[in-house]
Each structure stands twice: as structure tokens, then as C-alpha cells.
Length: 476
Image (cartoon, rainbow, N blue to C red):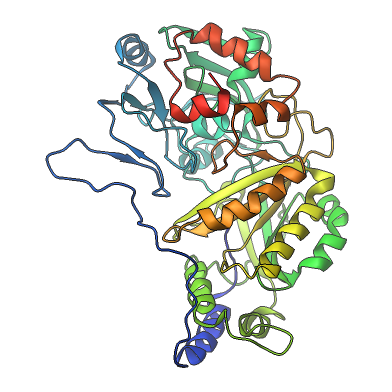
């Protein structure tokens, strides 16, 4: 999920410049047809609809339940009507949750159940929000080795969709799961790990919720630690030319290219050293300012550069660093105040720079009216059956995210960019927007696609967990 870390002073400079140009008659560039923030309208007296955070998915289930124990959940599964889907925090952009039948919230199954100080492991209820988990683990001297920069997610949803952060030596959230309990569609509780029901375990670590409902997870953690995050504005091409050194030098590294500009925000995160101090501050509203400036001046011509590019260069081209220091669970996440929709694909690591360059070139050559920064990250490969990083080896994968503001129709933009990912053998994030069907997805997972579906059919022969979207992506 994209964020910015420019200081408020820098954004005031951008805003002031944009406002001055905005006084010119007709200075406006719309970024596409407006889209409502919510896909459905609530009518008093009618059943309450479920709507995801992004406002692009919804449903009105006939049954909504929030079991407070595994026993309640098992009993519920045995009698729940129709298609059953679980919901955590509702931060998936794809239609993995919607059902008109039975929607089960995992919110009441929350908290740390037990922890092992020697093994640095903890048993955690699946409904636990990542934002709550950090302090809970810190209280027992543990921390997640890596963590997404969006911490509103439920742990169960993050694992089911193979959510990841950045860091070439760190896997996605599924890779830190060393055991789990699965409530099957038939109402049975299965304890799963590498030694207990190992095939179910491999399938359930990234299942998109197709096997049943995970109730608890055993996570491999590490001792609590502190981080220092440094944000800079640099030239995108300079960073890409130096990418291997950046990945080797930093514990975590990512880049956020600014569209229609040669600039990018780089984010380097390392273990905190004695004497590290904070500098500057995050501006959660920066994206809205960027949008306002782009809509005001993005179409104006310049001399070799657009007016928008000139403003960005003048405001932040020579800016200094912004630094955050603190416990890992406080430094990894960033506040989200801007609603957006997102498409993300993971390509083999070696293809990352070429894929990013083609996306940036396409946006510029076609003069697409978009300004939401991209996101460019690396992650370690694994052997989890439906993980986006399965089989990618030591170098792992490069995840590239494309975003659009929540009040703008994302489809024209995403439709032009998605085929670029296909050229580089990209795999779409299960929880984000894409258009691939089962046939095309199966080709991207040649080693274990059939293995996964054999387990899925054995656990759910009647297809009770399969909503319309899962039928499309799994072909079942």
C-alpha cells in the first residue's frame, strides 16, 4: 500500500505552487469518471450490507455471525446456509469475501493464546488485528520478523492471502506460519503443521479462504527489536541502477516512483543504532494534496517538462531525509487516510526493473491522467503452494503495485497496465484487483495447482466455501 513521508512543509510548498497556477482559467485535469465511495446504499429497515474498506466490494448476506469460540464456529459451520465466507478487516480489494448467504466475522477470536519464549513462537487467534498484535507480542518480548505497512489487517486474512511487506531476505506472512487450526466446512477442527496433516497445512497457509476457516495460527517470531526508517527523494533511474546494492545494504528497501516525474520516494529500514533520532514527520494527507496539484496543473505544458513535473522538482527534488525510529511494530505501519483501489503483481526479481520501467514509460507516453505513486518492493521466495513467491528461489520476487484514488474509476488505468505484468510472468496478489481466470492462473503455478485443488475438494466436496470470485479464479 502506497504511503508518502514528505514533511508538511514540503507539501505546503507543492500546494502553494498548485494553488497559484490554479487561478488560471480552466486549469483542471480530471483523472477519469468519478466513482461512488460505496457500491451500495444503505436503506433504513433493510438488512445491513457488508462493504469492504476500499468501497468496491459489497454483499447483503442472509446470515451474519461472529462466533466467540471454536465450538461456536464449528456448530455454525454445520448449519450455515449456502456459501460460507469468512471476513476479517475487509481490506481485500478483490471479491474474496462477498456472499449473499453466510458471512462469518472472526473479530471475536482475537488475542495471543500462548507463547513459547525459547522457540520465539506464539499461538494467535486468527481474528487478531495486526495493529493489536504488535503490542501484545512486545509484552512477551517477541515481534513479527516483518510486517506489512498496513496494520489494520486481521492475521488470518493476511496469511490466507499471502500478504507481504518488503525485504529480499524476508518472506510473506504465510511463510512465518508454522502451524494452524482449520475449521473445515464439515465442522471438524484440524490441527495442521509440517508434521500434522502436512498437505492441508501447505494448502491452508495460502488458501484464499477456500478450505474452511482458520481459527488460530502459530507464528514464528523473533526477539523484539527497534528500527530506523529513512525516507528520501531520489531519481528513479539512479535507484534502479543501484538496486542490487540497496537490497544488500538494507534490511528492508522499497521505492515509490512518482508518476509523470523522474523522482521517487525511497524507504530504507534497518535495525536502529544507538543515537538514531527522528527527523520530520509523515503527512497522511499528502496524497490528497498531490491529487489536487495534479488535477490543477498536470495538463499544462512546460519547456521539456510538464508544469506538474516542474512543481514536484521545485518542491521536493532537493529535499532532505525524513527519519522514523521506534519499536518495529510502530515503524513498519503507516496511517491510511486516503481511500484507494489497488492492483499488484509479483514478477521474478530479475524482471522487476524492466517491468517497472515499461509501466512508467507507458504511463508517460500515453499521458495517462494518473498521479498516485507506484510501489516497488522485493520479497523472499518460498515453497508454499499458492504463495505469489512459490518457486522463485533465493532471489525471490519483485512486487509492483498500481493504485487509483477511491473516487475515480480505476478500470481504464488498470486495463492498460495489467498486460505489462503478464509479459513478465507476473502473479496477481490474491487480495487485490486482477482479471485472470483459473486457466491462466494454473499456468503460473505449475508445480502445485493440482495439489491444492485435490486438498480443497477433499475438504469441501460440496463447494460451500466457493463464492463467485473463487469459482472464477479456481475454476471449480
